[in-house]
Length: 166
Image 1 (cartoon, rainbow, N blue to C red):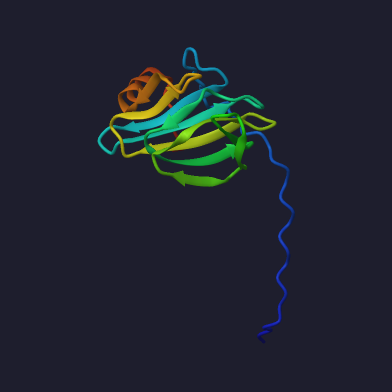
Image 2: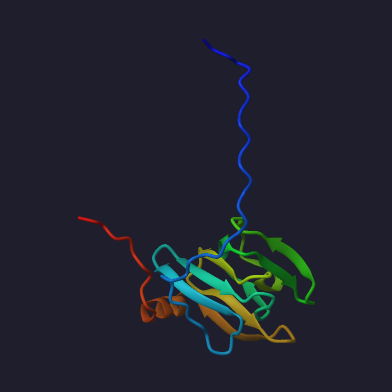
């Protein structure tokens, strides 16, 4: 017997957002850059890809910067808040939002919401500069490129890998 008028159960309400278990992540910091930590997952110089996790402090902003590589982000915990060069909040990316952006765009800053934000960033398509760090007058104070990320990746504690039970 076929009943075409079956009602579908409604989905249960989503549980409140929780904190991501970070016990398998070794966070690293760059000297002089506050309120953000990194853990590089993979650098592929041939494919010109840098995949990393970034952790942004809650209710803080990082330095003004520009992206010089196409990138994707997936927010794993909290929300990522973006601010224009004047400090005005321009975008909020909630947990599990996925965004793809081309290289370029205006200078901006980012930071966590009410809890630390953890985001996966995938930077693609450049063997040169990926991030340009800017000073108060929008002057370049530092750059981070694929060779820099490759050196940082080789120097850090390797990412945790899956286990394979016998």
